[in-house]
Image (cartoon, rainbow, N blue to C red; front, side, top):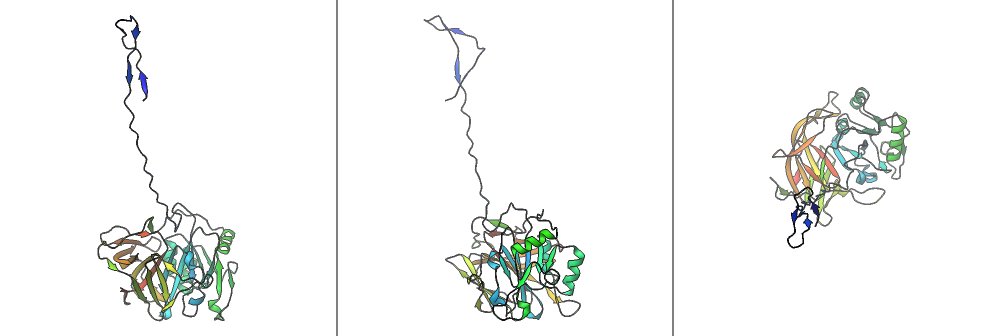
Length: 336
């Protein structure tokens, strides 16, 4: 016990000894406060990192699905409708040393909306005339195989048409970005928030069981997710077949699924699609075997898309990768 001697007090005589004695008084014990440390670390991404992500356009055509490579390492992937009843993928990577990614396809102008909101370096092989105009006029940092050959190469192990044979890698993207003096850092934060523990949607408003999710597109691209209860992830299927990484031979999985319902229309040339990615709409957030209705809103092409529950709270995701499925309002979503 800590003791403090209080000096300057009037002395008194000790009876029987004739000696002066100082009063010794114990100080009150200091309150010990326990510091509580909250661990907000998640595995899917370094939430403290300010490095810029890469947004890579990946082929999802019927012929090329079987050679898809590198999607599992993306922290988020958009599946986006394009002309011809097909879809393409826009995969985001951050703080990865190296990875082979492919095959790489051409850009559409609405893809840029999701690169803008994360200040990502945009990577593609070709472009629609709308995307070309936007990429040249907006000043977005991009690497395009029809203009820049260095970040890309071709492989054709399955004897596919040439448009399905372009690949890139994180190291090549990074090296070329340095040569073009692209900034390697950004002051834009993540567009999604993560919980280190699993999100339990079972008791949330409007919650429904989601063991199987079927998301048809406008034609021949149909995506299905099947919940693996043991691993607590969703297995991904394309047109009824397991979506397998060509290099690892493992099926793609995801922890989170966001279905974002949007309006679609033909662009002015009556060929390319024009997606209404700015505005607001409905959707679903799906994780751990359950789904809940959500709302989405995006005020401009460069501002982030905000996903909220029906009570207005922003959606927080389970720690893991995320597939965001943009689906036309005229297509039916099945959750069972």
